[in-house]
Picture (cartoon, rainbow, N blue to C red):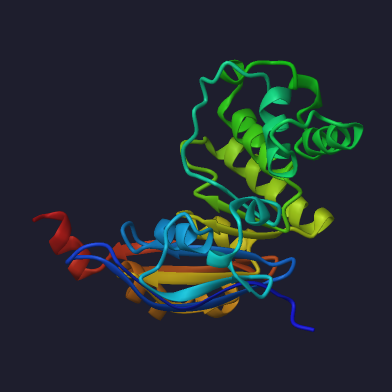
Length: 269
């Protein structure tokens, strides 16, 4: 039996005369962490939205556990897959506990109240994200890292098999970035959740991902393990930079050496 949980086949999306998604095919596998990387405007977030049916492709299909996602109901999709967007309303007048409760909505009928089973799942989501001590605090009173963990807890309360995250560390300082990335690794390792995320920090992507998918101009141009991807050709093709590559406990990381000629010309025009 295949362990493929989410797949795209020959996706096209023509957004404008200057940008399109072209002929994208990919497979995501059970209990895998995949990071989608690339320069700004390469189509990373658009691809996430195509995978979750937030945008319909002009051609091609997305399959969720072998079923065409466009033939599934939003509720059925939400019971299997959830996406956390890049920005949220952090000033909602809600406590952490109240926010996390919203994650159970895909499993409730409109007239149905919360059951003991729902509360057990809510408590689990709060515990898994280490929010027990602040679950009664309001969202505006939290730090950036705490708020991001609260939104991840809400997604976790859906008990998804697949969690998609659009730049989960954006606007966070380095300590809160690492806090969120360690949580993502924990959810994958301990709960078996397949995780797909858009990341700008390539060193974090290499440290926390099983596989990288690199995009450029609306196309997937490379994919593979971090060790396979981290080489001079990759950084020159995708980002136009020259780098030095090192290893820490068999995990690659890079330090940029200089901006390529094409990038320098762009910077001064």
